[in-house]
Image: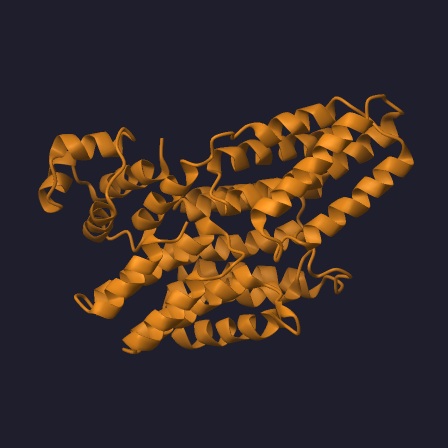
Length: 388
């Protein structure tokens, strides 16, 4: 079922409304609404926003409608998973595996800045090369190392696919990565596959599923990089559930684990813990918790740390930091600053569509709650509608 349909049904049931009651409040034809909720029809942008408003979804339903539109372009969701199956059927010698490991590291370090479609294409090229070259088993040790390299490569491709809005393909790739981690006996790969599950659930408004995936991942690898990131995902989920105590506990636990880790040699590696990213998680959690002072402080830190001499080193984090500052400006009554900052965030070149649409949708709801009927607020809505 489409993300929009799932979210509408869940929000309606949570409120205790029947389909007829929701249709009367919107107002909308009950039959049309039923087809939308069953995934048979896609809503208009205005209907999606109206349903979000009456169900008090704080932008979750609007974001889900955007994601469904993007996911419609995912015409070949099993492509990466098929390539990974080909890799699993082969093996390689030590020199080839060592070269593959080095290549995967470099690709993972390009995640934040290289255009997503280009990075996915390059990673697919390496998968094809591995499947072509590694046609003969060379022993159990080499086979395991190949599985490990392929597992990291699968995790990277799955993240990029989800950034592009390819939900089905990303989930297939994530599942394949998890299987590779199981076969290789590599807890950190398994934990990162769970981290991806938590991220997917967060951007699809399945907040309890975020907590389930986070707990499962931390149980497998309780002291690695994935565990830190999973604590951050927990904090984001607790914030959207309105559990302030849960936010504080998750942030404190993740911070303590991060402080015990050595500084990374390659902080730009997507699957190596980056101390600078903790401000990013804290920023989002405090924004949702209504602590604007802390949210703004962490957002400004994210922007400072993400700026490099040759451009932005962390454009996706910086886009969400700008959306956070826009939300803080809106709450302070500064509509012009909120809209200009928010529109600027939407123009990021390297972006993760699900995460961007989630936070931008929350800002859109904030603007129209506080500035209903203002042309500037409508301007942000129009800019958001064009994000693809």
